[in-house]
Image (cartoon, one colour):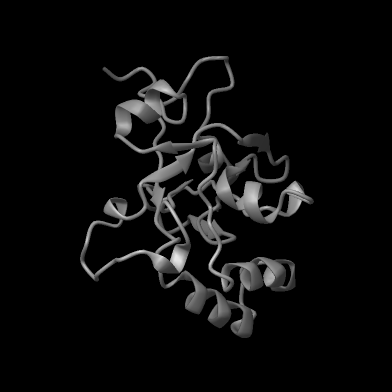
Length: 176
């Protein structure tokens, strides 16, 4: 997932229902990501972006994960684990090359930071139903309700999928 965000304070943006969110959320972080392979399920664990930079810089290990496996040719024997971050059986999590090459990959443009984020964050904190330890996110939710600015001197304006491929954030792998 690639977190998209606006130029300016989160709640001060103008957005109407049905509008393309990328018209408002035009910015992303192009290069502060870390990737690990989780040994238990062999899934990728990607962290970084504006959430790590702005909210979890003092404790990056607690930053939200940015990996999901949203498209699966389904079988009744499959199950998502921890939302769509990983699957069972474990072989379905191997969405990465292990031979030094590349597999086809994509990015979900994550439009979480629309003007409604402060209200939604307060609700999430009260619900305490985050898929893992919700208390870890209390400070994060509190900061989101303060109408922060996510854009920084390292932010990149989004221009399209070719830009993401050139920056190594997605890959066509062996496809032409």
